[in-house]
Amino acid sequence: MPALREVGEVEAIRLITRGAAARDDVVVGPGDDAAVLRCGPGEDLVATTDAMVEGRHYLSSWLEPRGRGARLAALNLSDIAAMAARPRWALLSVGVRPEHDIDALLEFQAGLAAALAADGAVIAGGNLVAVRGDEWWSLTLLGSVARERAWRRAGARPGDLLALTGLPGRAAAGFLLAHEHADIAREPMWRPLLEAWLHPRARTAFAQALAAAGVVSAAIDVSDGVAGDLAHLCAASHMGCDVEAWSLPEDSLIARAAGIIRRPVTPLRLGPSDDYELLLAVDPRGRAAAEQVARDTQTPLWFIGRFTPQPGQLALVEVHGGRTPLGRGFDHFTGAR
Image (cartoon, rainbow, N blue to C red; front, top):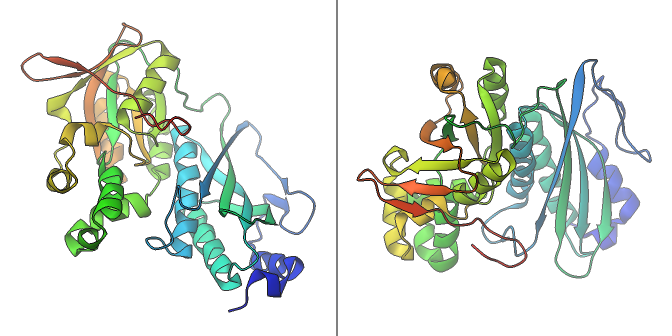
């Protein structure tokens, strides 16, 4: 298993790009100075980018190269899903040390390509550079959506229902278990929490199907936690929101993990957690349609609150009427939660 310093840049790029998929919408793919892509008539281009840094976004002891590639795909696919767009093309930039194993790099590429292909996207180009410190992986993902039909954070209206996919907080619970109790975290019972952290899956199929129903007025993906990302959506929409404590999905596994990592259950489920689920503002008249799409795509969907006309007022409402202000999400620079 040779290292990159033994293989060299030219041969490494040849190995990485030799299996690039050929598609009609990729006029010029990997190997040239830039990719040439063909969008269809009546479509808008949707673009997003996200990155992973060694030691901060992944730990080699917990996530193998193929899994890292799949995770980087999910980070970007989730943003595309939040816009109700169809993933199309990806550009990958990699900064790795010269001693990085070439086979591990190819495994990463394979995991990334497979995860993108599962949602209809292909790697169309990229860049490879050498670094001395922490390694990093950056993906730019491009998608398409019918003209003027992209979901946005702005658009929620008073009385719209707040909908949530998946089980919030599982990724945070898995992360904390792995960091604080690595021996316990490897027990089989905790595998669903670790999967939520290590191998998230974007809700692209659900989002595209739901977009056709025309019942969503605003959307955001949950990458920094329910409370934090709901705050972003409400700020863009100039709305407030009441989250109903009794409507949050029950999760006995999170409850059991909370006892080990010594965290209150509700803040764990609503606080910082890179779950890569979706928060949606749904027209009340479209609830049945949204539930049908969720069943058709086998997507867990919960209606957990309602938007209010009081901008910036976000609260967790208890069944007895008590109200608790929701906290903030994760801040990448201050570390505030």
